[in-house]
Image (cartoon, rainbow, N blue to C red; front, side, top):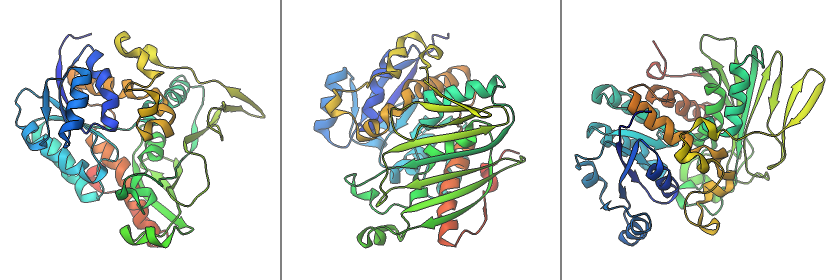
Length: 371
């Protein structure tokens, strides 16, 4: 492994603080700086982890010539603006999901990557979860045979989350279910058709003008006979938290467990069997392998809500960090890169647009597709 060190700054210290110990221990990272608007929170985290360089002003952070890369964990409405600013300032960018909230913002990020020559990666947890890595290993070995269909769902109750979540269109935060169905075959979405169903509380509708309790989207893959179906809900739908995907192959199929902490199922013809998903820490540098099976920030009582609800995001956090840093050190594209991230994110944005138009087919823009 290369001994090159990347100076990393983490922006946003709610969910973002989960990643600090991973960067501190990764052999290719120097956990250089942190950024948080509230000085007391900034100092609390900085003191806890011994981080010297601290910023309450993001623009001032971007002026620091020693920072190579920023890892953005701010509220979703800030993702695009902060990503574009960092790329234009000559920084590499890792950004939590979604990439942006509009198709135009996605286009601007892809363009900023081209103009700056810097690297962008959307930090989509599910495509580095142990469940996904298990299915990917089966697929790469040929055990699934020909892929025939993929399905994914992300159902969640967002009551009690920060106010900007209230009434959010379900598909505007769909990367956790869109990501795995595109990532397994490394496919691109060509067009989508989506239906909305049900109705959320009236006081939630006005903020975004989105009435639907559930949105379900069909995705047609480009240059492929494959399609996928994804389902998303955020409010007024009784369901235990679930990030899931099912994969149907000609030889074997994989179905995510219906109830959290139960075992998933592999189907081989008429012979289903429960399977325990192994951990994939062995794919990581030894210094960060322990982070696939434990929370990395603070005590259990103070874990970020997304980490608690998502069962630790399938041990994905150290895999995400390792993919981003490895791509920088090896001078290669990460997965997903800017274009791929835009394709994944725009599926959700355009799916909601389709739902508002009664299921109209909408094509993905050219900038999200390979040449």
